[in-house]
Length: 571
Ligand SMILES: Nc1ncnc2c1ncn2[C@@H]1O[C@H](COP(=O)(O)OP(=O)(O)O)[C@@H](O)[C@H]1O
Ligand SMILES: [Mg+2]
Ligand SMILES: [Zn+2]
Image (cartoon, rainbow, N blue to C red):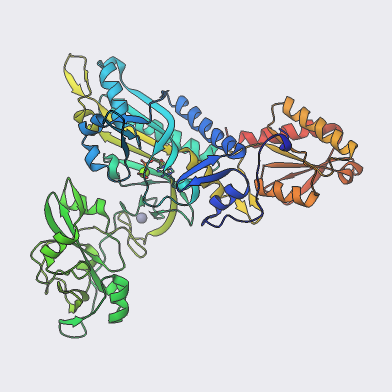
């Protein structure tokens, strides 16, 4: 491919709205452009990378025995009513009313649609297990679309769904997907860890996330040297020892005007956030509850839900909070509160602390848990944090950021039961199908690779996702000898099946080298009078500082071999 015949609008300057490296580089290297918040146009280089990611995913799904289909993004609301997700999915759901007054959903995920297909066309144990997958555009009205294509409102996902007769069979399908996802990460050149995770709106219990550790990741993971790895929302935190010491004075109410947040109250009272008892009012299955976590900790809704055994759980609204505590939002506390308390282990271990006084602009200091508010037991309800103990061994957990690339779930009968997807077993008895679902973000694979492989000059493509294997830079295209050599090499490489980009633009060498580093193809070949005088072409890998001169006569053959070797890493 000649640069002059394609469309690669590289930029010298960083886009002003890009907060992270991958976003900045994907725009600067001409891979994509933003249309509006959360929606991007892929330009030729970006599209090639996206197709590479898609192809790796497709090959691994096929290898695992999954069967490709394509479902519509448009989904009727009735299907979502059958599972009640029309009410529970939340504001991310994109829907609209068509001209006939019918509500249609733009699918954020496809459990209902695929289960509908299966219940209509699968009826016998002989047809199970089956795993169906698609690679398709999803829509989610994300609150905060950001970080370029890492979190957008429209994105491409590979979603697979397994239909199984029993727990043993779903375990086999799950393991096959686990292996496939591991291979996908390896072939795409992504460093990754697999962690136990929370299931969120999808449902189900056993589930794992494939995470790429990286400082801009939006997810937090807790890792331990014993091998334990979990999303902090899920990670069990060991019970800390009871703190020694006593409150420095008697319990008393103090005025704390305008301090409705942990930060403001901690500054006002001059005490560390970890000395504060944060009191969050939730509504669990219709009843208000007060969840207590330390001021420096975040509550994990998943853990709270598990501790309560609640089916439905959500933060209480301002009116419910006022009714339960007698105070406006931000001043709740456990002392004298009459709603049910759920006390985190770390709060139970505090010798003393400060908390809201259930009165506007007031807090109580020198509160002693157990003395000033009673509880029978404590529970693990905070998201694992720095300093927490591993639940499996005595070590302290290592908390890191990560990008969630893929997520696999065992769903059990959640959807099949609600939608009545059954099969007949050998004895002719009707049984409910058991399911698993498995998602991986195609755009995210590309962005996460860039986020973990770049230098100050630009992207360093891993061979599996590189838009081209080789870029040829002709130093001076107006020199007939140089042009002939460059074109000859381009044609020879292309004929041998190497994906080659030839920078044939009439521009200065410095400009072209900068662009070559910015777009970052794995192998760069420079051809100019200088290299020809040295007897050939200069070859340099993007991930190395060294270059070598290869005699013109062997150049094609040697570069084909190099490209093939790199590609092997991605097979
Ligand atoms: N807003 C988004 N933008 C880009 N990719 C996304 C987005 N939401 C989800 N994905 C991708 O789809 C995969 C499966 O999604 P899922 O686990 O349902 O999402 P979430 O964890 O956000 O609820 C994610 O691991 C991620 O790679
Ligand atoms: Mg997920
Ligand atoms: Zn451990």
